[in-house]
Structures are given as structure tokens and as C-alpha cells.
Length: 392
Image (cartoon, rainbow, N blue to C red; front, side, top):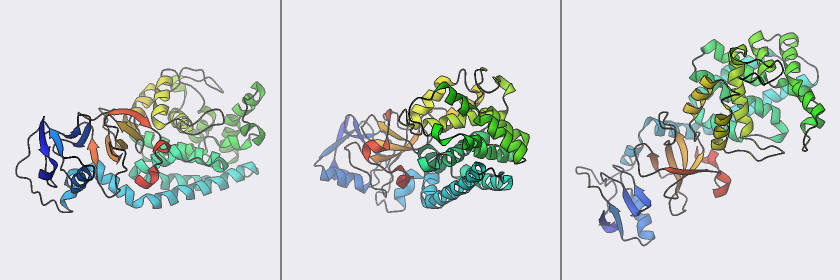
């Protein structure tokens, strides 16, 4: 390793290998430009020298104007991240509008009115185009948002979002995707018929109460196919979403391909969504922990082909989740590398010295390209008082 004086560093300077402040604290990755902010920070901290085992890359223009600041961040994933950052508030309005519509439908069910199935299909169609185009924000919303006063509406919408992502990945076709999304919006609608005294109970449920809750599958099926004229493939999801791949589910103990494809997809989405939300008997899981739990259950509960597709594309560290690196820096996952799920693309939120990185400062790392950097743990945004939505 050779030492380089900080006063000799220039904005835009690149090296063939990573540049380090200390043996465990990286300043920049290989072939990544040194930024004026980096140099100013080093001077502010009183650091006189940095180290690298690489060589300076010749022929680099060190003027490094504002346009050139973007040159190291021009990957498709980074561009997609920046686009999403501009439209996130519009997406949040769309999400809340969908919750409001679902609450009206739930109110109709509680008051023994039928469901307007055209309204469900309209919500589904609009939701599909938004989720496929802007999946990182929707994944964050579906993983995090759960208002206890709108619990059922949140759960239905969030499950529909994850179902759309899985359905799109397995290429079920546009018509099927609409029906799958509609299934996600109504699959648990039978819960609206379960007494609130049971649903809001914080103690362990009695066997009789558990059996009453299990009836929501029957209530939902009847409501959809008989009272509201939904297609049988959508109504079947209300009946089957608690069936398990090994035959140990309910109400009919179906197994393997006896369970409809939509039900197998929504079973995964439903479980993942529920795991990321707080319950009276446990705290919410981080998305990373929910992934591990689903993987542990996959041998008996879920369709193994579908679970592999879901996990490989969502990544062990899902989009918009926070991770700590070996340098002690904290980053937000903005993209997954499908072949190497432990090495996603991240945006640094807190640097190795514990300072929050400015929103205007682009500090992205594709961990496949920076072998010296690796994830040591998933972290909760509350640990660092970070509002992830403001960063997406």
C-alpha cells in the first residue's frame, strides 16, 4: 500500500484499486472518482494521507464539473433510482387512493352489500402498470405501511403488490395478471365477517376462536362467487390461500398442483407481507428476516419453483432495505444482482464515520464490482433515525 497526501488529491481522480482512509475504512472504490466532498471531509477530519495499492488512472479530466459528477453513477439501476425519487409522492397518493377504495368495499361487505367487481378490476389494472414500472417504491410501501385502523385494506393491497411482482416474474400473461391482482385485493375479504372481538384480541386465541377465524376462507369464497359474481379462479383464492404445498393447510388439505396457481402465488405474498408487520404477539420482522423465515418454510408450505423465483428476484436484501457494511457504513439497497443476492447495489446513507451523507451526494456501490466491501448485517431504519421513504 502506498500513501497519498490529501493535498495531492483532486476531484475526479481515479485509481485502479480502492482508496482507504484506514485499513477497514474505504474512501472510494476502484475506478471510482474522488469527489470534492470526499476531499473536504478528509480535511475537516484532519486526515493528512490515504492509502491505495492501485495506480492512478491516466487521462482523467480532473476539472470534474457537475455533469461529470454523474459519470460514475450512470448504471441502469442508479438511473432508475433517480427517476423513482422524483415521482414517489405521486405513487404515495395512488397507494392511499387504493386504500380508500378498498375501505369502501370492506364497509360494503360488513353491511351485507355485494362487492362491485368492476371497481376491483379497475384498481387492479391501474395498480399493475404502476407496480411494474416503480417496483422499489411499492415494495417499500408494501413492506412498511400498516395502519391498524386500515389493517385489512393495507393487507389486501400490500399482498396484491407482492403478487403482481411474482406474477410478472413468472410471466403469467396480461389477462392472468389482472385476475391475479384482483385476487390479491379480495382474497382475505372473508375476514370482514369475523367478529372484531376475536380479531382485536391480544391474548392467545382459544381453539374455538381459531376455528371461527378459519371460516373466513368459506365466507370469502361464498361472497365472491355467489354474491358478487367473480370468476371462479378468483373466488378459489379466497378458499385456498391457507392450503399448503405438503397438504397440511386448510380448509381442504389440498397439496401440490391441486392448489391453483393464483393461490400458490398469493400464499407466498400473504405470508411475506404479514411477516413484515407488527402483531400483538411479536414485533415486525425486517424484510431480510422475513426472507429467511419464508426460505425455512419453503420445503413444506410453498411451491418450491415459485419461492425460488420470488427470493432470487427480491434478493435476500430486498429493495429499500438498510444494510451495514464491513466499513461500518450504512447503505440502502437500490438494486439486486440476481446471480449474487448477497452483493446488491447500494446507496450509502451513513458513512464509515457515522455521518449522514447528503442527499445531493451520489455515493453508489455495486458490491459485485467492489470485492473489498461486503454486508455484515441487515439493520432497522429506526436504529439510525432514518426515514427510508425520504431517500427512495
